[in-house]
Amino acid sequence: MATSSLASAASSFMLSANTINNTTTRTSFIAFNKTNSKFKRLVVRAEEGEAPPPVATTETKEAVKPPPPPPIGPKRALVSQGHASYSLGKEKVTHLHFFYQENLSGDHPTAVLVAKPNNTTINAFNLASFGEVYVLDTPLTETQDPNSKVVGQLQGLSVSVVRDGTILVFMVDLGFTSGEFNGSSVSVLSRNPILETNYRELAVVGGRGKFRMARGFAELHTTYMNATSSVVIVEYNVTVFHYE
Image (cartoon, rainbow, N blue to C red; front, side, top):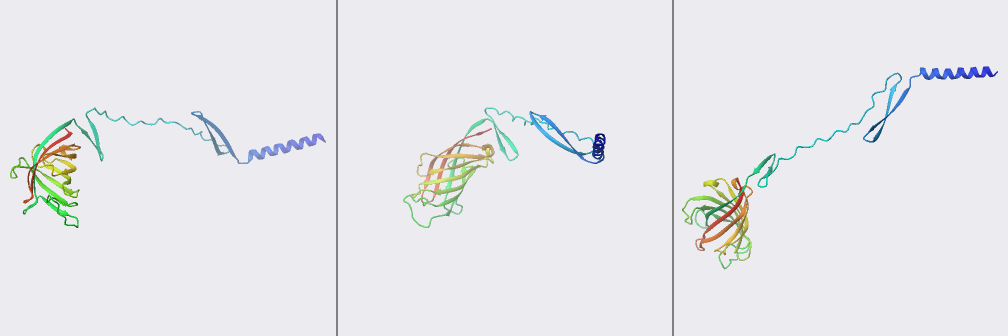
């Protein structure tokens, strides 16, 4: 009786084993990969009889470092404009001397009123009223004589910024049309106390051409003023710091 039960159990075990061997199953393969002290668990499922695919690994690639920028000397600098780079040479100082010839009257005035306030107040000096705006296109000459050689043009805006008209703000470009600096200019943005006839100073805030990135100052001296004919002649001595 015991022998029969044992044989029956053995027969059931063999039948279960054959069933398992003859049935298509999915087998789980578990792999562990150690990279940089970190563990990664990978489970791969494959049909019976197939070899498991290779275990994926993680590789650490060293970042590519960009090349170092080119060295810049103590007297040179790089200016980036769009996609181009410009190298500025050694700084230099240039002194400019010329005369400003303003004429508000006649058929060809060099300054024109384009805006004014609603009031008609006339100040004691017969100057521009507070708030008046003038457009300037005034010749610059070699000497005080209005008929001397023209070396450039002063172009821009002049605004009366005080109630008595004695101070203007100049926003102008001093463009040169002859000589070494033909085609270049310096830019002035500054207050202009016009009744300080002996000496007044304006700021040079920039430039173009050979005066790119310029800075400096302009010393002004009024050499002639006629309120009746609205003619003014001003001597300019300009000191400009710029680059070769």
